[in-house]
Image (cartoon, rainbow, N blue to C red; front, side):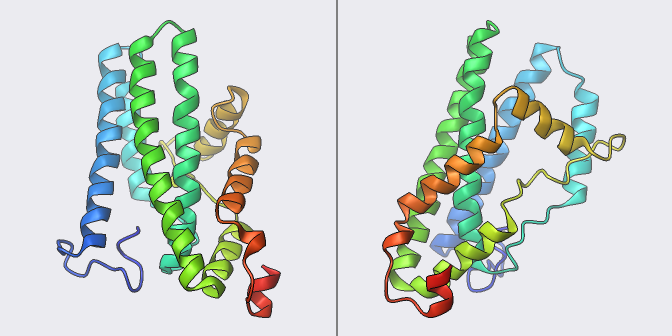
Length: 210
């Protein structure tokens, strides 16, 4: 997603430009996270891997609607939030795994959470720099994304059977305190504070109102 937007698009899909290299590396690491968890649950013999495989295929086929409008500013605001959200959810799982007597799974989730944290820092710093060099457009982009509300990239997840699979998944995550409405609010407050939005001055009226 982040290498297909205007001004930062990787036209050749193999560009040697730093941003193109970064985004491909980001994608490959995301793939490793999925492989790690997938292999672990397969070896555990406690998960219906046929259904997992089917769900992954259906999910990829369904795509995603993120609301970034092909705009890199919106995309960076989105990923700043999304990476912290996935850091939060993966970070909450080790506790549950330990309580369930599975230290290996706890370590797996902790390793993935650490990777999410690294990228959260990167994207947050990029937006911080955008607010410094182009505060008006950056502020408007942040406002736009927050008004739309941040949808997780799996929100169109399906398995070919349950049309509300993601809704049910989200309810379970909320009940188990893996990722909750309170976490969503905390992330918003964290980003507003990290970017010092209330201290940015010299904005045009629309950006100031944002």
